[in-house]
Length: 522
Image 1 (cartoon, one colour):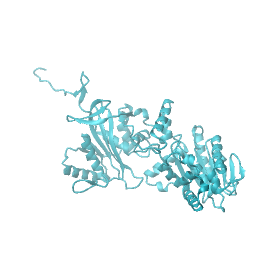
Image 2 (cartoon, helix red, strand yellow; image 1 turned 90 degrees about the vertical axis):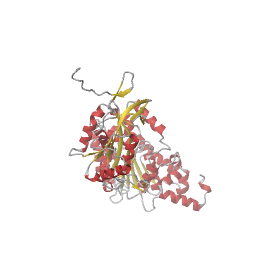
Image 3 (cartoon, one colour; image 1 turned 120 degrees about the vertical axis):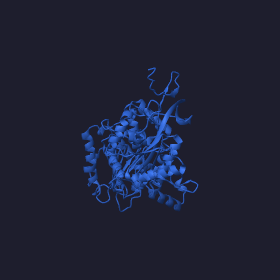
Image 4 (cartoon, helix red, strand yellow; image 1 turned 30 degrees about the vertical axis):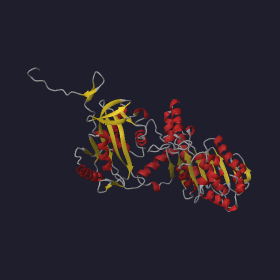
């Protein structure tokens, strides 16, 4: 873009857009970083939080390479360039290492002194101080770049405390090795960094990825997830923006840049390097201690194939082999109200083969769906499908033997609706087993029901079942949701294999039942 050919009104319009929107600023002034690919929706969400001065504590917890630092650089430049003349912003930027700290400062200095678009709109912004760690702009704004959180002290530079402190990947493998080191990180944030902020306007931002199960960032995530589950996310002191490289539905977070090929390449690198857990840590925020981990990835088996029904018998077709199975449904309906922190209603189909291997075939996982969907006179669903609709449809689709549904007071309407729906559809063969949770602790109940199957490696999932895999791997006191794994427990609770075995020719045949011989010939 040749800015010099623009008229004044157009230039002012562009400048006003950049002033009010971080992504627009980046595309105008930092095109090499912001125009490499299509801007993903989550960048707009993070940018809005960065621009919001009312967000006092912001945690941006994203996978590696997903733009945390680029958005930070753009945010600093935008704030400084559009800073009112009667104000003097004072920012501190802490990076993991000295090399990164210097590199980040070089980026800011380079664009302030050589970026033609910035020079066209704002002129020279170089101030009296221009060092590796400390710069001052001509409008009085100051930036300090450090590689050590302990180096952040407020009050002396501009006779004021910091307006913004950014901790950019301040936790890493080197400073989270020991318990003392991790405690020191947390103490520095709370006892050094936070008090250094301006009391009424100062903001604190953390960019990072959890590197240890007991790290400050992972503990922050754990506390946030608990607050969400308890319906208290709005009262949480931090605004937490966190995403995985691939979401629960299987969609990529940044499909135009971090493609399937790139993600698979990263995965293969970590696996071939003997560190597969690093892949899930860096790109899916899954950090678990060996002591806390109840089940690990080696306990999960994966399968690819499909369900087929023939001669009154269900089969799984896996690698061309037709395996007879019995199918069952588990259902854990959500009992809370329609909020963004609500639990999920999950309806899951599992298949059991003659060797008692369990295969998760399909499941529906939805937040805030009704007990049963509204229907028109011809039976067409109007609006959302309900829990009962999913149970009935999946039961028919997979010719299930039975469905086990959690039976608590809040779910009684589901059983009433199921009975009515069976009558309307004339499907009295649909067997529904109400299962009371009893007085046992939920996680103890799930563990006792699934531990043997996982330890024997007989549970097979599909690779795109990301939310179920996550709940299996994070199962324990630190997990955010347990709806899907609890549904797996219910689905397997009353499951049994078909009465078949392989004959001498490798063909599945019905196992003959032993019969008592006549006493005459016995």
